[in-house]
Image 1 (tube, rainbow, N blue to C red):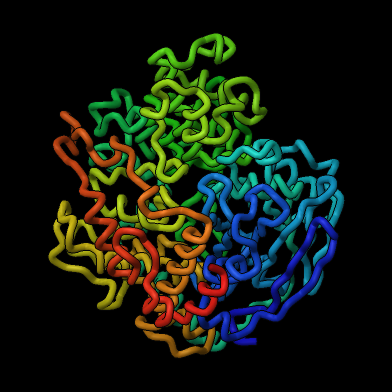
Image 2 (image 1 turned 180 degrees about the vertical axis):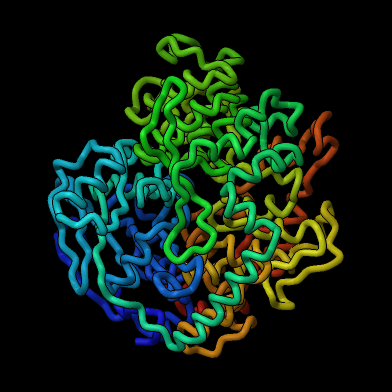
Length: 627
């Protein structure tokens, strides 16, 4: 097998208990690289159209890329892929930590799971072997307890575990998969899919080494990159010191951070925000920095919180998205409550973006009388009430009372509550958007609408071209000039280029911070040094386009039309805000979306990839076979 890969795919059918291995074909690796690409290629061919996302037919994949587990800095990512129960279309989620690298060390490029176990189980994955083990004693435990129990039972604290918590067990559609005690593959409802299969965890133990074509070249590139990184006073240095929470104040002040369920923007709309936007205050509780495998940045952190009503002996530092979703979105300035909410979500498996969003939605419903104290069992679900938020999250985890309604996200909750609740339900295609407003960077709108996993902030790097000059990587194809922030008709080409580049990096297993946001990551050189191939940027972008297009075809096959995906009126400034840093701004979502689809070779209106595009990307026969 080519360097960078271990050459094996695992297929587990939990209904029958059968386990089999397949060889990873090199042509498949070249065409789709790995990660999301490998995942969508396998699912598109092997999963029936119309499969129930929570049924035995849905395939849940844990996939890696060729750079995962190698000496490439920031090459630590793994991806969970499936049909999403939240959107009804293509679903994926991406996480760092050490799980992905360990899966490669165990000799596997990916493991795909179908069927439903008769009782709770977990998978033990090791070199050349996958075992189905009983997990009845683990069912009901949180993710930290599950990880500790598996490590204890196996007598090996180095075993890496990706598990679900009680929220995923109860099939909350806003739940994800947690590894390394707080790294989350959080979006698309992947945790509910894992819970529906009664799959409590995937544990991995490996001692093998990922082969590298030119290890000397990888090391030389690594040293140069890290040296440059540490001398660069930009975003990377902020990440090294504070992590993503270091950007909270700027993003709030700029108008990027939504306030009060997307009704407002700017720091003046959130008095007392300093309690949560002061990054130094957040890291004052940090006892240890934490980084993913092979990462020189180490943006994560472990906190110990001894003050306040919710002491935590050890918990993960909240990311920007968490601070915004539980903070500004809910007008909550209580940092201690956010620490507790973050810990609850990590342990139960809830996605913090969606959970904060559904709490903000519920608070607005409460404000307008659509939800009463009778519905909340006496909880005063008022704006800024951190203790009430904690109490309601406990109900969401247990699917108790109103929590049962909120556990499936704002779209379904609004349908169940009725009246004018849908007015307050901010989502795109069923998924709550990330905490980045298109009113500040319109390219966010392009990604929220046009990526096959709608509403995803991690799928919107095209926002990097909203303010020129933009240098995403040390290649002319990723350097953009003369683009105006609120120009809506000329960004289709650059947006398509950036999204294809991001997909290639995702498939390779690289963190998008390094790939997209530092401006100096030599992705092509690292890729070729690991694999021994001779790829250029044109080849890389073609692979990204192939992956993005097949993900789009998956959605179309499942009946999702581009016209179904719209921004909530608050996200696009309809009507525009009267006050704040993005006052007066309205986003032309139609021009942004049409421009992107046209540049991708898709029909600008329907989003259907054109025949010539499918033919050029080598997808026509596969797609036509599945129609």
